[in-house]
Length: 102
Image (cartoon, rainbow, N blue to C red; front, side):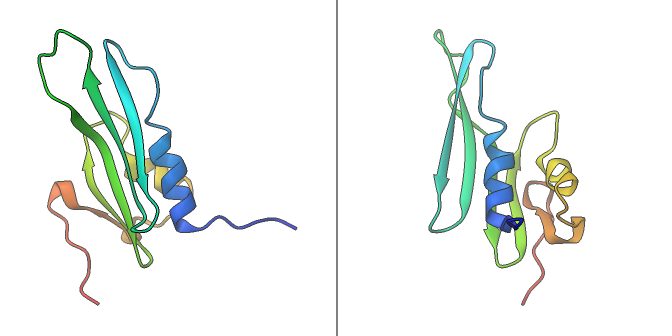
């Protein structure tokens, strides 16, 4: 029997995909499963020119994915759409979009 992934599982997996080796930096993956919030941050190696930065930050709220931050060259919303999440269920908060009011 085939297992169906939850929205939170898809978002978690796709955000985690941004964690990995970086040039002259270290990335860290964090999750808050209680609030279904997932993030990757990057910290430059010494000497630091910049402080730590959020690479991607997404949260599942009901049946919506709210992307608070995405500074990548491969947008998270596109990865989520490739996994079958409709664009109308994705809110790009960092781009000024707002979630529909329930």
